[in-house]
Length: 637
Image (cartoon, rainbow, N blue to C red; front, top):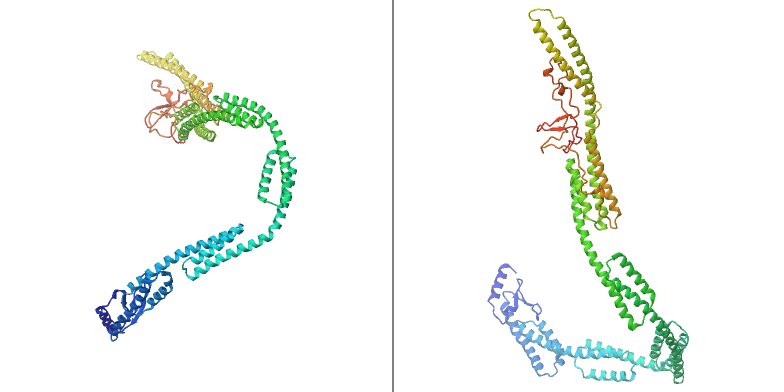
């Protein structure tokens, strides 16, 4: 079909008007299609062309009247029927006819009417199906019954009720009936076999009861009271479940069974009387244990009392039973004392745990401070800080075992790390001092030699001056010359005296021992290390991982100080101060003693060498072994 023809056909369709046109649509190829909904299947009604359209529509709308007529006939029959289920097949065929009818009209109205009929039939059929399903289930429930007479009558009643039940579609109806028949046949087969085996069953029961009697007669001699009592109860129940047997044998077997049972329980009663006497003695023993427990319940000696309660419990278990009417009360008293003590112990432990937690927090803070302090190069402050941390550590008290050893090891490791660094620094400084000392000794020796020469020269000058005075020629300037020579002699004598004093000092300096400050520093460091060792000994001696480290040796007045001379300026150079000669002249003029600087040039003040700080001019004693307050130690100048 061309596009023009298709356009004409669509225009034609849009101009058409007939009942329920909205249920149909026109395809591009000319097919008139009935649209699907919940009750209508989609299908092609007819194919038209521009030439045949009018005729086809008229024919199909006329045919719809015939379709409506058939539906109306069925409706009349439906309304007249009392048992709607009898029209189920006709409603089904009408529905099928409606799904294949070729016409144009209101199919939806007719489909709704058929749908209502189907729904009514379905509802009625489901009610009937439910009734027949109950009959099938009832029959299957009776299939295993052994009430032979009653069940036979019940199956007859089911068959009558089935006949009176209504319509159900054939497929489901046959399935339900087959279930009833299968149950009925199964029951009647069992009933037949039952009657055949009834005589055999009486003989089988006889054998079972003989076996029970023989077991009972064997158990009559047993002294396993509880086990045998339970066994007799079990045999009695088995006897009941076996049922009746051959009459002439049933009573005889029962009397034998009762006789064996009575013999056992008479012996059991006799033994029970003996047990009661023993239980009375056990009661006295457990009463004493209970009174001991009640005496311990207020105790606060936790460890000893815990062991005591454990001992009491062991004795309780060994003692044995007491009369039941008094045993529960006695046990309640005993356990109540235990619970009271252990509840108090638990509360005490909670307090101890809280103390441990607080101590852990405090020691964690000390450990953190020690970790920070161990890298310090301010030896004096850091040493005092380490001593202070140890004092605080000893005062805090123990922590939980899970933390104690590791925390103490870390704390000691931080202290050890710091003092090893300090030792290394001291050793470096000591080497520097020793090198200075060797230089000073060499210089002092040179000075002694020089002073000997100077003294000798001065003495020779005095001899020359004296000879000159004696040889003065009388004349106009003789007195002036004498006075000048005498003055030179007096100056020379004073110079000789000063040189001799310096000579004696220089000789003495060659014998100067190690400075007292160095010895003091070594002593203090040994004390600081000893303190840590004593603390560790106390740490491992306690009940917990760490005990309080407090001894007379470590009283608060035992401060381990670092004998350091610190610069007054925070910006001091990091290089270690070096003794510096302020006058580098190698020679000293002895002819003019008034202007000599030999006391500095020759290093006269040997006991206190001077180091000059180039940053701020402060003077630091180099005889003090700790002059380093910086982070790094540079090579001595």
